[in-house]
Image (cartoon, rainbow, N blue to C red; front, side, top):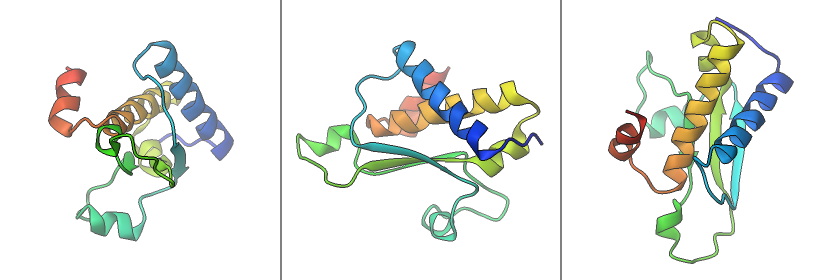
Length: 124
């Protein structure tokens, strides 16, 4: 388990987002909020049918770009990065940063409309 304060965690999210943009792994991102919470909420756990021994590292909530069909979406889509589960899995700062970057990329892939099988193909 490796813990960091909230400011460092937010900095790691910001750095990861910038790196993904610089590596051209993501393109134009609009109307998207990227936040973090300590753990998934009770409602999120129920909606996703998570068992007691399951958790999330990240979650995309919103309308993926391909399904917007040019419509203006008033509320932003949201990516939530979950700090607590990542701290439980990380051994050091490098582990934590890599986990954040990978999770952020995964959730951004959902923003672009990719499903899990497509994301897993890109990851291998």
